[in-house]
Image 1 (cartoon, one colour):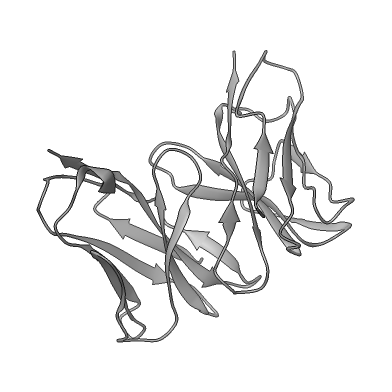
Image 2 (cartoon, each protein chain N blue to C red):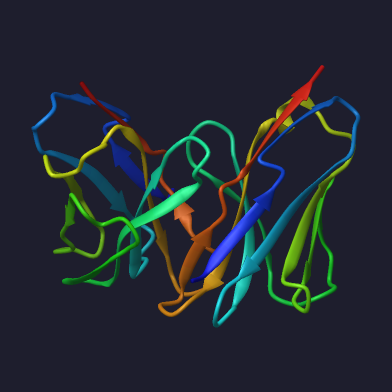
Amino acid sequence: EDKVVQSPLSLVVHEGDTVTLNCSYEVTNFRSLLWYKQEKKAPTFLFMLTSSGIEKKSGRLSSILDKKELFSILNITATQTGDSAIYLCAVYGGATNKLIFGTGTLLAVQP
Amino acid sequence: DGGITQSPKYLFRKEGQNVTLSCEQNLNHDAMYWYRQDPGQGLRLIYYSQIVNDFQKGDIAEGYSVSREKKESFPLTVTSAQKNPTAFYLCASSQGLKGGYTFGSGTRLTVV
């Protein structure tokens, strides 16, 4: 069965800390891995990763994919209270080529 | 601006009533999806449609029904057969693999 597992499930940090969110997957017909940020309602797109070892970066956020170990991480440096959200990892693939989501990591950044 | 509109944002219904959630997109996307989100369980796929007049069951389709008569619209009906319908429902659309999915703002359904 295809699955995506995220860890930790929740995390509390202080402003200025650096955090690493993990995503592992077992998905047939892997095509890409995506990260989303969900603050209150609609998840918003962060990154799409298709190749191993190539870091994608956007401001204080970065992500990398390891297709050999079936793993991705999302790093957030110098965290701010506005980074508080649920971070969703999803893998595009499976028997019917659709997104398979992990449970998400709830990040709370305290002032 | 292109996007996905879900309505209503909040919906209250009595147990045993059917209810229909609206999802409209003007992105010209072929594929549309319905997800359910419960605390601690991430997004679970209810139904999806990759083309007009065709749709497939997702992982938790029991107690739900959909239609796809127009490319822009993919309404979801939560029937009285759904045992635990209180949840946050998200609609999404996509056009192939470009940029992943675009999500609507969701409908929070509460059944009392």
